[in-house]
Length: 406
Image (cartoon, rainbow, N blue to C red; front, side):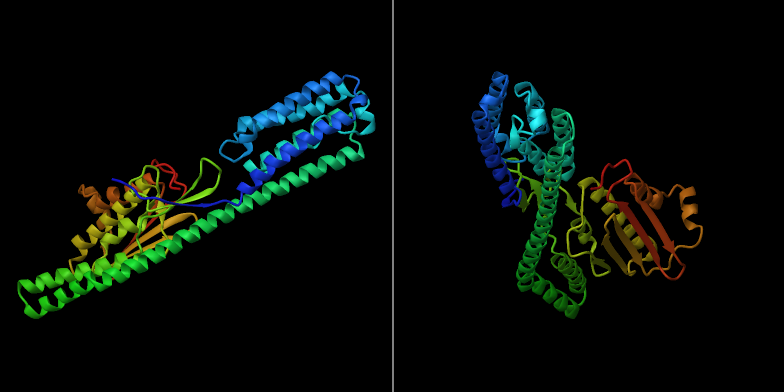
């Protein structure tokens, strides 16, 4: 099966990577310029020359690494931080007086570029981790925590953490925007489908139902079937069950990518639970669901839908063909709840235990067993003469054998 994709790129983060690239180049040149101007102050000039040569080669060779989040790996960040810390600690070996005059270190402000890379890549926690090592190296290099040293250390520490926090907020905003665009696209598609289907298929089904009822006999049965299909189709249209979109991380530049019209069978893609439950809707089964997709891993969604199907089978068998049933889907923050209710005669007290004893394990295995494997629960409430209600709950972080639910 082929799949059709449309990619929409959204990235607030990418300009930060470009700014970091420019910062590293500018501060590299600044560190070299400071060393050239103060070359007479170095007792071991060769130490400064060797280190700065390594720093220049490293900076130029790793420019593609800081062009985006995808190639800026943890290994690269660690090596970059080591080079920055080495330059700080080598400063007293090249300039014996550096500890006493609070002069610039060999890498100078180039060091901040390494810390900023941590901040953009991993947020404020990574920034705090890197800046703490830089602070420790500066204090060791000076030999004592002077006022200027503490001032510079705090400046780098606070600035990097602030940038890391801003990056995390920007990423959260991008995810929210992508979700809003997804819902907007689904709503437009639902309206388009509703117009097309209403102008054709639904009107034909309604006409067949009316004519069949008027003619009677076999035509009446055909009309009744057409009426049931009309109800089911109207439910599908009003639910807006178009293929769910995915939000992923672009491998090239770290931009948030929204892929729409993805093949539902794609491996690893989440499944809209509503699409699995909507076919149950008919003239005797009402289906109510949230306006937004209820996304679950395919395995968990299929198991939950199968449990709902088992509950509806029980309604047909035990409540009668004329019983009305209702399916309600609730997408809570930490769990998904599906309630199946009917207006049948209810279940006599002790009947479930008797059925299990007789080897009839529909509720025990088809419903409770499935929910137990997902780390969820199945509660059955029945009052004789007032119908039966089955409440199915699964957590979004599953504790069962089926693995993570989200």
